[in-house]
Length: 213
Image (cartoon, rainbow, N blue to C red):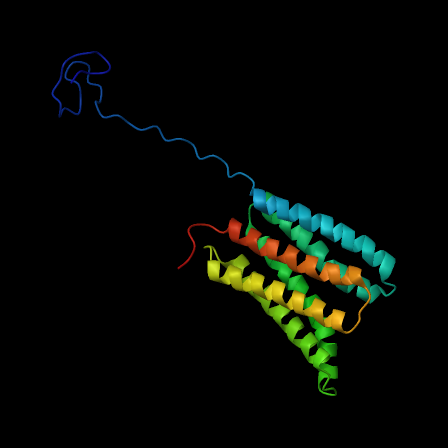
């Protein structure tokens, strides 16, 4: 072979050129790591969550007359919205831990009331309301666990989405059978499940590495 620096013919196994002393070993240039790009799916989810939070806030102002109900129904979405944007732009999905935590706290308030009524009633709708609320809490617990895991976990994602969607559908059917006339509330119940399912997928997409087996 020939030296790339001076052109002198040298042995194929030579490490240095006998003519100019330059190394014949090609050194690979280390390319600087590019800064991680913004997670597109997570950003879209955060925007959808923000739009829903704003819509829900306006709807609550018009609908609710109780400050406690207003805070209970809106604070979790506002916290989830802030946590989502922090997770996206700070590139730390750990911020999303506070989103399901807020929903759990908000759900525990009506659930404690349901438990009190549950012991004094055999109404199947009351029992069903307790079950759907409990499943909603479990789904948020799984979402919290997802925010703490570094690796992707497909099984946990599927279970979490299932526990968000199914109770919401059951709850809507239950309210419909009870001749509940607030169709906007029924619609929002399904939208909430959809938004939180998107949030679950967003957490999954921000996890590192290959899915855990």
